[in-house]
Amino acid sequence: MPKPTHTPARLVVLVSGSGTNLQAILDACEDPAYGAQVVAVGADRHDIEGLARAERKGIPTFVKRLGDHDSRDAWDRALTRAVAGFEPDLVVLAGFMKLVSAEFLAAFPQAVVNTHPALSPSFPGTKGPADALAYGVKVTGCTLFVVDPGVDTGQIIAQSVVPVEDDDTVETLHERIKVAERVMLVDNVGRMSREGWSVDGRRVRLGI
Image 1 (cartoon, rainbow, N blue to C red):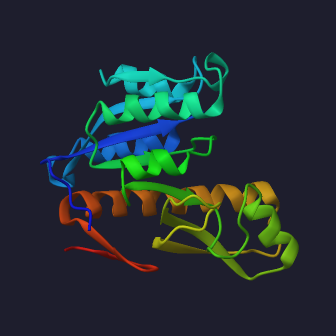
Image 2: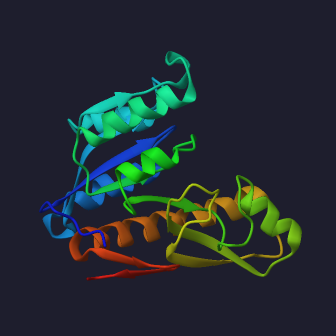
């Protein structure tokens, strides 16, 4: 039954690209009432805007490149150690394009979250908006979930619905999903930080 042990709650955010979701969290953390602070930002590659966003705020950063390690297991152990060193209450995968292992998840039990650009369990994988458009659904959206060893199969924390318009392309639909995703992520990371959360089977409850 996770509950933040620090006030404000300590967040480690992992990124692989531009870091727009990270920026939304950083902006929210400017308000002390939000109840969280980003204590570190990690990445799997150098020279990305996500790291620059953190550095401009004076937030510690680290990079763990898969190619710098002898094996994926070695990389995963290095990533785990780096994240654990910041004693996070919550680890947020914000556009982090690497799968983490069961061993990584065990180090932060039920405290690693990610988003998916579809209404889980529909359309798992990396092409959620395209799959939704191809299937002809009238609504899709985004999901915030507790990461487990599967692909987009973890317990659902929150979902937001996005209508599919008749003239949508994959790009226009995905952009509207991203807007909803940022709002959902910021709102619920804040609630988890302030109120705690519990996981019972497939159910996640905020506030414990």
